[in-house]
Length: 448
Ligand code: COA
Image (tube, rainbow, N blue to C red):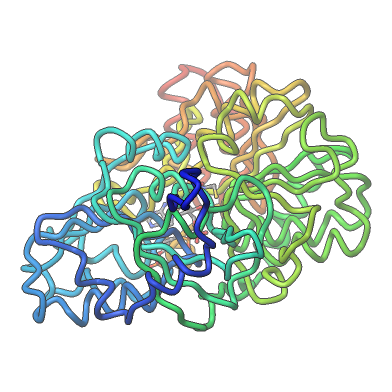
């Protein structure tokens, strides 16, 4: 904002004055949403819960109708998905999770398939946000707030939106990188010191430990890692304690990475870009992680169209992508997001990192999963993907498939050799059925 002074020259108004003018209550803030608007909610643990709660609580009061809520990993209550809210809100999910799955399965919401790296472009064009609901740190002395633990599509959404409503939370860490917005650029401010959403470290069982150990055997000193979400990536970290000078260029990371930084295993010394820094697009964990990231020059968050761009990822050598999946067929086609037609998650950054790792000099891609699901009653290695399943990662892209029973190397191998190796890492109780399929498909006897 520029004031015209008596000498006719422009003089910038102090940001503190502007700040004070923009403050209101959560209820007043969500009153800026109009029926028919598209509202984009800040991602994952960066969700401004004070604003999303107020939006749902005020739906009747403001008479909201057909407000489209665009969100990716929803770690909060997702009250806008409740059946009684269906007149007011319709969820357009870019990824599904525990709190949003039912709304899509029951037809009260929709799923839009998209690579995470392309979400900013989607928001700039096809899914233009009328309103962005944000959560940011307190401003620094220059008036800049950090998007904290969620930069990803949150920053691009804010930049594209007509109206930016922000919860300013003193508990939000000031995470460095391309991760700031100036008070001038916020339209409405709500001050609220709520606890950030936390993701507790997952329980790691014996199967996950064995998978982690197998994956760790494919990781070399100096590699640059991408770790997906969940028990398997965390289990890998347990077996990396003897490695040296690992790097992190990952869509996200969690508390387990901090442990390896403290142990001197992750140094980021061998990275060709962002040397010495852990780079990600969002963080999900506990206060231990959030405190570590606060004002720490060794951690940078950048928008997802930069961090997940395969052409950026490839600039580091020896990138190893480690992701999980729902099922793999005998050709190596991977479904990571649905059980048949039933969508259970999304593509996320899996394909972005698989592509980037494949293009990186010395890069490798690892798809890891337990060999069975549903308490051992379903094999995750199957002759054919379940009817209706999405092919998330193509058979040409997969380097290794890892289960608790071993490692199958797919890249460069024939269909027959892939199938042979995949059968060898399937649960023993399902191998006979897979061998029958092998012998009829390849017209030859199976040899282990
Ligand atoms: N058939 C039937 N059900 C299956 C199944 C199969 N082959 N595989 C898994 N399931 C079920 C599980 O039983 C579980 O059901 P429940 O919720 O009723 O317990 C559910 O699907 C989730 O499986 P689980 O093994 O607990 O998932 P996870 O937390 O380890 O996550 C993915 C695995 C694949 C869903 C997850 O990694 C994902 O979403 N990946 C895609 C995105 C991605 O890779 N992003 C990476 C960048 S961060």
